[in-house]
Picture 1 (cartoon, rainbow, N blue to C red):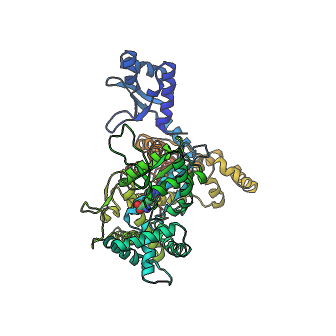
Picture 2: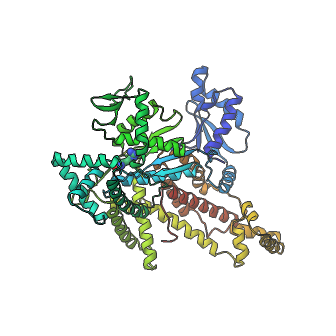
Picture 3: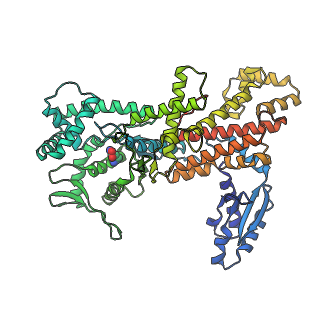
Length: 620
Ligand code: ARG
């Protein structure tokens, strides 16, 4: 099982091999919009030059090699030597039959124990989470879901900022206040900006903060206890936010968890001559001869012995290798930190902390701007807190539901649940649909609309197909126990039901004439095959490309590829729905085939939304 282009590529590869042509040029791709053919292979052109042959002649020899296969409606040569491919509808039908049987929609599942560690979220202790952390969380969680879908073991780590000078600022502020009561989130939110401003203004105040940081990092028991208290308060607040967002983490580690690894790491790097002293600081040179831009050394220890962001990141790699032995570590962090990761990664490879066959990847992302084109802020000019942002989304989503007269006759609780799902779909889809490196404009009006390339539009389409499928089911006859068993008549289900149930089913069918049996399965789409007609063809071909899009998105860590596909699919479904009879189709076999197309579309949409971290309501 694969995608249509993957199947075709295999056929072309065989032909290339038989003709002694370089097989890497055999790739078949979907033809661009406005072209007559469905697919094309441009390999004859690439082969022609080195062989000093006419590309059209090579194309013809490839066509001769495969033209007898019973799957092509047309094979022709276009332009200087493209091979244009059009498939028979019978082949598309058979392909879809296989696709419907595939648990993974045609995606080849990785058959290894490989683990991928994903580092996303990255909120900082004591500071309210803001929209800057929103992108990281949304993209990282989606990537985690994609890797898991492909069959990898995945570990999502929140990697909190819980170990730097801000910790010392808070601890020293609590000292100055002579505070020893119970710390709350509200208090932290007040203390930190106050302390940070004071440190900026007053060098002696900053020295206190540095001293407190050092004491904490050296394991001072009182400070450690205090720190633990406000860490816990902070984490509780973060968990609430991440729950509301539907973002999951497997590990709640932070920079501080790297601490035990730092001293031995520093010793080791010093003794092997990888790190050396420079003006009192301990550094690793990471520049390379062919660097176009200067890459400054990674500073491990400042002259006062304090550790830095790069130190904890390097030591965290040691921790992750020890605990998970991953084949990849993916950092979903603001693109503006690209140089930092370049330094850390180079230091990790240079020092052999990590072997060359483990990939360290910075999956960077752009800035979220307001409609004024500047980094997104509240009206008052402050950084918007994540919880306020979600609240704002829910308000807007509720208004949109009213406007579109959706979710009308439902009780409060269900309406609230739907509004929440619409809001999250809006936020996540607006973020994920952009190529992650690009900056994007946060426009709450646009992203919550039920029209256009938005999360709510896709939810609405998915729910609409859901209700169509429900209607189809309701129109079935009443012999329900048996019917419901039969609906899932795949081999797997047959094996999983009890022998008693199986006997019942057999008894039911034995009483029927062959004609009745056929009609029954046509009505229920059971054991029915696709019968793709001209009107269904575009939707069917698109459905056959899911694996291509998934694999592309995974390879480049780019969820927007899935967003593009989902939107295209929803649009294609809309025109299919407008042009074809489905429930009202009188030819029963065709009706069953179209219902199967609806089912497959629904399954793909739900799967993609799930990969994007978007929940779909039962109705709307
Ligand atoms: N706490 C950091 C910030 O707010 C993000 C952490 C990203 N992950 C990492 N391993 N450096 O910018």
